[in-house]
Length: 480
Length: 103
Image 1 (tube, rainbow over the protein chains, first blue to last red):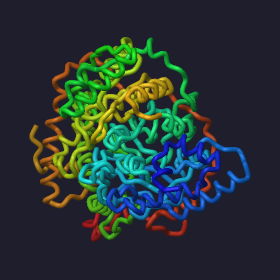
Image 2: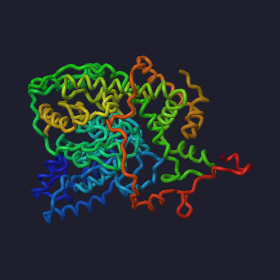
Image 3: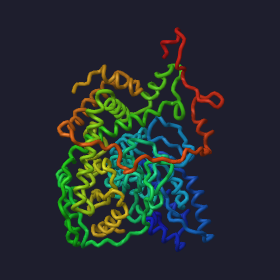
Image 4: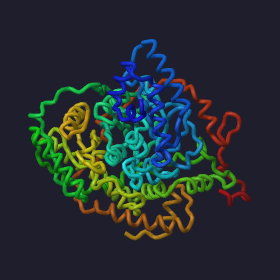
């Protein structure tokens, strides 16, 4: 079988093929490795490929299939993991030189759940350093490119994971989303990406960026696949005190009555579109939903324009505190002790952190410092309250909200130079993060470069959100 | 708001970052631009609005205070670049007078 015949399939289709003994896990892995050999030098998805480990795991899984043992839900899934999530024995750098040479001694909870469910891990994917960015250009180990056009960025910070799924290097991938880092690259690469409700997935083993917003979530070729992955990695974990008890995931979609469904379109987001193609596809999507009998209503989210500034107060504040642990004492490259206490740490950090972590350390240290915390950090936390209230009011009028995912399609590498313009790329992403809501981006009905659509659900209504998105995706003409 | 060089140097010191002069200038300029951007928030009247610091809807997460063996403790220790037996070595915090310059 030609590799493309296998690697173009969703996990659901692959699973059917494996169950019917149409091909083996080793053959499937071989097809992905073939694609990697062909295109990785251009796309640059991986910071580490575990070829030997994946091949051994595939053989083991094939034996299990032959023996007819119980078949766990992700048996045969080839998964790429963002390099800020710990996989025991594989190097983890979060694309930073300050973690060069670091080998995690344990698996993140999501990774041990993947393994237990029969998945195999093919490698660790590229990201903006410490997940700080929207383009994967700011990796210390070079940028990832968009599989649809190598001159363009894949989005970020989970650009490696999104590009891996889009390029047919794996079936499924894990990313992390603080202010859009799963959803925005999924939109740019034309795949499905989900930010689950904050606390629905354990973060034990995730390198922290902004702890009050960080989540781990799935990237996949279909909504059904994203759901399957989420049902495996989600659920309570005593190792993460923010993980929500009694959170359950449905493995399959339940029926949604489209005639009773109300989809809300936030007026303010429509006004933020700067690209004619995005506007066209967004309007077309809305028309398709209405034609399918769904009620579409306009809703207001008046605090929207303050979401990005508030996010860029809260995130650097939390990041500066989380990044304080990188000092060369307990792990990572060593500081030079000859410089003495204090300076040995500052020198190492000055040499090893890239520009964006430095900006955020400075900004966060400043906005939390005596005399400024009320003016900046507490102000942003008050805006956070307003944003949540906006969403609550909107959800009184609509069951699910629909927005464009990004103001433009994937931009050219190097075209956005100043930090504030890059921050504005997250315009449609960060309010959801600040409110802790679940959201899914799916490819819209576009013919050229992918245009992403974002569906936002109510707090802890992740299953319902997935049900709705799965139905809508079919309406947009996307295969499910 | 104007942020002068000495201030960026002071913040860098608080954040444990040693910056080269050229880098400090560039970061100071970015810093001013970002501050201008986040100062947008001053347009809002927030006097009556409470703070949201977390969105879990959980309060006071407790668990029993039990000792659980972490099986990889030796590996954790091996990650430390400077060690002495089973201890992690750090640069000296206290110095004799002639060494003071290093601290």
